[in-house]
Length: 306
Image 1 (cartoon, rainbow, N blue to C red):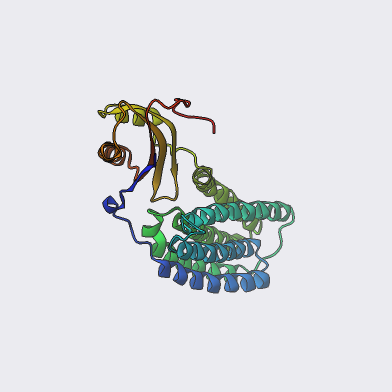
Image 2 (cartoon, rainbow, N blue to C red):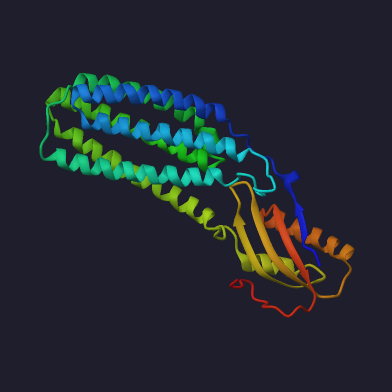
């Protein structure tokens, strides 16, 4: 017996993510990174250099996101039967990890500087922080819409948003240093930037990890799926179930179906269509692969340890 297997892609209205917005953001961030590194070295501001480092990690992550975005559009082949649809998940995961690494480095540097504050050229810090706010703000606006539909774009968007907030922190620090000569503020602002980076990375790492590990999505209740499918006439028991995200747009279900009668394959096709409709309408599962069985001797648990 073969597998019942059908795509329901016709029902899906996908948001088309724009790669060119990402490319433009890469260019903008490259300019600000160079400006901030030079400015940070001249002024002696660790907060400015930390912001530049964060910006440079953005450039790398944006390049990575852009490459993953392009890869994910490639067609499937004999050697890559799913294509490169998971490339963006990998990019999102790596981007989130780089945010944490940058944050830990900044905490180390800021802690050592906090006890030995150094004089800083605050005017240069203020102007470069303003430049950072304008550039990152523009990039954030470019990617805002895409970030709501795609984890990879969300990781790039978060990099840029934290950059903009970091530039705001650097600006505040620059003003306080100029007015009061509080050079220790530079280290405090760096620490705040770093802590915020770790905070925003956590959810992203968690989401990407769950998808890469093929965990059942949080919003899916396998017992509820079984209850609904068991209501359909001709179904005896749905078992050996796997539900996972291939990427953010594709939700897969794979299962064995014990039929209540020894039906013909043409009759199973009709039964399969009913099951797929229920799975799509009630659980948003758009790709099903169901193995038909009749009184087969195998484990009938919902979850079977392979």
